[in-house]
Length: 210
Picture 1 (cartoon, rainbow, N blue to C red):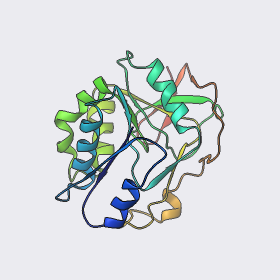
Picture 2 (cartoon, rainbow, N blue to C red; picture 1 turned 60 degrees about the horizontal axis):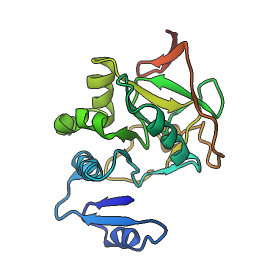
Picture 3 (cartoon, helix red, strand yellow; picture 1 turned 90 degrees about the vertical axis):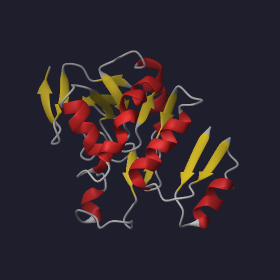
C-alpha cells in the first residue's frame, strides 16, 4: 500500500499521486499546510493504522533499486530488538563492508523504516521537533540515540540520494555537498548482514570498537 500525504499548493503533485496505478494507493490532500514535521507525523500515524512496518519516502529523495529488500530484511529481523529504533537508506561517505553490510549508528537519515511499536515511541512527542535545528532528524538523534542509547541501522553504501536542490528553505551548504557520494542507484538484492564488533558514533559517525 502506498500512502500519499500532500500539503496544499501543487495540484499537479496531487494528480500525479492519484494517477499511480502500479500499486494500491491512497491519497490524502491536506486542507491546511502541515509542513515537514506534522505531515510526516500524520503520514506515519495513518500508515500504522493498517500496517506493522512503514517506510517514509519523501519527494526530495530517490531510492536504490534494492531499497525495499533492505527494508524487508530489517522488518523481518529487528522487530523485537529494542535497541534498534529504525533503518535508514541514506548516508554520506561510504563505510567499510561493501553493498551487503549494515552498520549501527546514531544518526537518523533518508528513507527511514519503522516497526509500529518503535514509531509509537516517537509519535507522542514528535511535535517537539518543530523548528528545532536540524528538524525531526536531529531531534531523534539527540533525544533518542544520544540520550537514550537507541541505534539506527544504515547500509555501508547509500541506498538513497538527495534530489531536493530547490525547496521551501535555503540549503545550509552547496547542493553538491549534500548529495551522497556513496549512492548506488542500481543495486541487486544482497545477503544483508549487520557489522559486528564496531559501530558508528555521534554526528561525525566515527567508528568505535564495541
